[in-house]
Length: 221
Length: 241
Image (cartoon, rainbow over the protein chains, first blue to last red):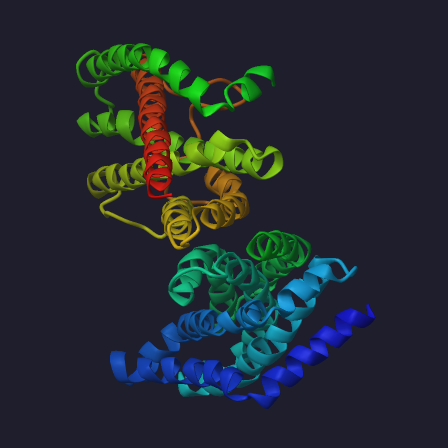
């Protein structure tokens, strides 16, 4: 448990001291969303209708953009091999790295999402559900993204490839995330969709680090 | 399990496959011809769908193959990672483009059928979407395997990706039961027997058999090609050395 916390703290301080990486994903998230009113026109009705989908899609893309720093630096400078040599289970270390990744990308996106909701004329009643769906969904992004990021270590054009691999797997997340917010916008209960998102998180929490660790072992071995 | 290890020797597999190949082709051509005859001429048109029902004899077997090949590839990936079976990885890589082709065919024939029947080429319902994800998984696997300078790394990374993607298979299979979708529910593999009339079931099963044999034939051709390519590469390398 101690090494888990140490690794989280190390990754957090690395991300905060070279703050540009984490900030860039967040800026990308904001810029993609602001492009839509310019692209589809500023009518409030149209924007309100598509707001939940746009915020979610932008979050997916921004998360893809930030995945390369999950393992790449550790792979390049050899820290990854040291992590493999420690007696701590690799799955636990992967979980720590995914947690740190979520704290530096998922959480800031979650916090700024209501602001983007206001940009997009989203009904304020839907904000709690938007936050809840993203709170459940963005950790899944970090966990699934970890699998992809570990698989493409050392590949050519890894940044594009990881998006090709991970985005198809995130489609169920997008479907239920968006339909939760849409249910809230139309005044229905979003409980079912949120429960399914929670179930996805519960399934990914043990399974994704397992696959990620297997991928890391073959990348380093 | 004995034959499984017996075939692990590439040279033995090459001889065995070469002997099997013409039989599979003959049997496949026969089944395919019978399936086409019954499907196009000797089966009735549907009382609601008319002649378009014949698209089903291609669509349904391709969709079955799309899932079947993925499961085969995942099983091969598993035996490659667990037992380091030398041919399992060759099989998975050889099957991938075939699987992607069948998935594309299922999507296209589905769209051709959907236009006159549902009035639209495409709807974003659970089954169509999950089959589209399956298609992307195939493409992602092919891209990942070819993205490394060291082919060994590509094989292992691809094998792990295949096993991760297996979660999609039950979602596709049960999507029509779990969600209330436009796509009709299962009508052949049901607990209370198929709900398709025997006159239509016969060509459907014949075509499914023909597609399976076609896949097996292509798999053997592609695996033999890959093994030969590897041997040539080794010979060239030993020439340089």
